[in-house]
Image (cartoon, rainbow, N blue to C red):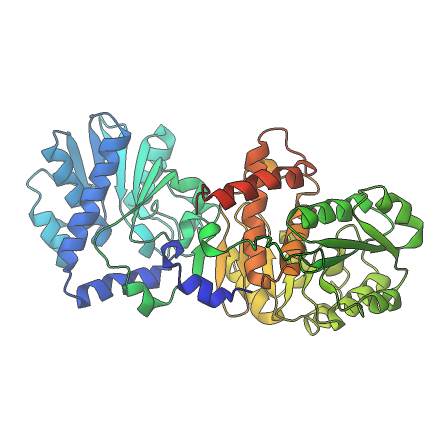
Length: 502
């Protein structure tokens, strides 16, 4: 089993830095003798390179703010002008009010500097947004807001520096409801949460993470706790010659008497993920439906919580899956309680969560570190009613800390959070995953990996990525039943070492 804290610390290339951590990285580089002016020069050069690579030579408007983001814009202007580009540079504020590295960058620009206005865009279809970047914590206002509104109205091509101005760097929130939609965003050293969390992700366009000379070693002092999901963060346990069905893990999936398709999808996924044995425990009236699913699945009668407790005395059971297709009821609550009392690794979804909406503490008090909760936003809202923060990342972290379990908050920007604040954002889910049953497949993948010995956090991360990769493999026309069948090809790609770690 792989400890997730060790896993992340050994793969810092996947780190995502908060705004405060990025400032810390900058300062650490300066403390090591790398001047701020050198970092700004590299940043401006990277911005100019992005413009040259993505567009043909034409007039470009560069909008500079009063801080270091604006300094980056001055450097980019100088490099583009050297390459023969016509540059219209505008500054928010007065040139003599610039300080530090930004003032030094402005001093090396010998072209005209216009005041920020509608004239800043005249004759230009390309705009470099170097107004504010990741440090902004309030809505755009005044001339900056008016100009961004005009950029959006004209649908100009935007290259954003760090983030499109108006985005909150840590949450991806559009402050005051206004930010430009960028074709390209150039950020530095490591990405930020806003690049992956919606709605920010949809406004950043193509993301370029430029190396500006900050050594990777500064990350050891920062201790990142957020990562972008990918195979570089985890390892799927491969079969070995000595394996048999029990060493590959036995999953018990608790099914209800209605909506049987949910558990059938989940169990198919668990088996495709590598679980060696799978048992569906369900009411007698539904057993024939479950038995028709696949010859390799065992079905057994489970009418009430006491029956499940008896089943779980089998020492060969390695993981539980409960909730898909189950209706909220007192009986479901009792069955979930029995599952949690076993202390086995457990994935809880759907009915296993919504059965406790009137008394969430009754659920939370029984959860443990080997549990994974997989709520969507609606289920989250009913269980964690006191958490109203706008950041999906923080909502997931709060829930994980409160419950002591891993929380996978489902969505296009799924966040997986552990109780110790370690978190991962999954970015590879295509829109075609918005189909009934996809969440059930996800729970099955998690249980199948946990049955093989993966810890709960790592299993949740790997499963989220595998689901997205399987959906991409299928392509248009996806239905949930396709996902488990696409998984072997995805796993084969991982085994061959050809998977993209991001």
